[in-house]
Image (cartoon, rainbow, N blue to C red; front, top):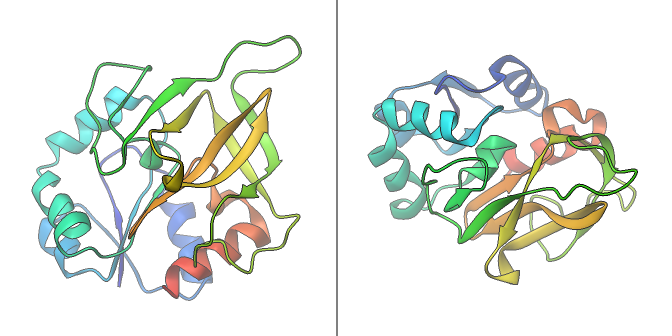
Length: 201
């Protein structure tokens, strides 16, 4: 069972539809017992960093989430804001993130001819081996919508990069904890392939 966490800031329907299309048994929940009973956990999220953390902290789920990810060490996938909150914090606000990966989020720099937010399709470059991306087509493209990017303290946590004016980290992984800045649920066949890899972990 994959639990898609409902903490009030995610596009749950499209994420669940893609997971089910990938063969996943999916439950949307905001219940700690469901989280701890899950085989895998997906953290969706769109919007402002501080609002996301405010909603998550108000949910009463923090203890269960820490136990799931750090104690039980079961697979976790964060998407977009759900990936950013895996880190320590963001220039977008003052809230502390989950702190599971040593990273912060920085605003994409203003550059001539470069639109912010970064919105649209982009290729990614793998930086290390991972079951989440191994076997992906070399020309795989994913859909992005973001103004902030993840900056890891340690290179070994960088799973993939992309470029939009600058090269930036677009996917992270530390052990069982993974995150993608792009939206696999909006990324057609390549997104489906990634979701299938997550289902089959």
